[in-house]
Length: 373
Image (cartoon, rainbow, N blue to C red; front, side):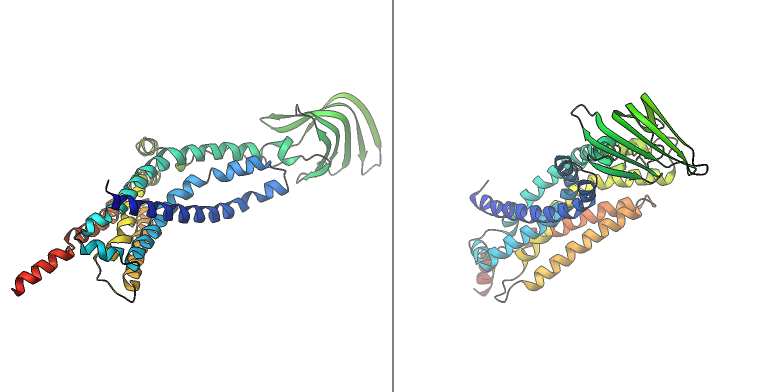
């Protein structure tokens, strides 16, 4: 690889990392707000909070990668024009294709990396996130019940636990059970353990007292026990979600679409997602070429390249919008898949053709000189 390519690639990579990491940091903060309540109200450990929010980043990276590369490439090539470096390159006979080679290399590398992210990284991260989310929402001992605090549930049950031991045993337990409107039940125990059954969570109490007050008759009864089970009933424990589309690989998506019992609508959705996975990485290369082509083929303007930059941005927005629109419509109409591929291939052909046919400056001058002679 020539020194010129290395020089431009370093600048593009630096710009890409700055833009991509900045955007990812902002989106990470936005996404993390969904889990702040789990930290403040339910005592979610900080390490679990960081792990869950980090598992969302592969999906965010795949979305931001082409846009960040577009911004980085446009900034670098526009700066080459502003510093007159691009003018010197063209003056010594370097073609637009050669100058654009650095952007093409970075676009190809990111495209290949995104193939891995979309088809291995995201499915793995989404599956891990689903398991963690289920564990967090159903972890009674760590999420719903907090040491030294009264926890109320919608079924008129309140529980207080003094502290949790390292083995998960609860010490100093008070349960106020108001599920039956006709009576009030208060149970106190020295210790207990939480258990999970198909009917819901239960707590096995050891050595305590159960007191019952009949609200209608005013009758009071009390008993002591060595072992007693309290059923929490329906406390809205989340069920584990089924495997989502994002957790499936391309092969799994096509296999699901071809299964006999799958409806036509679901089959189209699976196929549309599979084709989108195949195409999405290559928009890194498309956006890199859209960012640099206009700047490389346009005439030098001392007042700046505002018009060229505006046209390039509009072209990028158009391609991105059409990709989203065609991907959504492909979930209902199979023939839209062709337009998805056309939206990716046509910009490559157009930008490649413009770069290839762009005249080299010293050749153009030689032709003009020969014509005048």
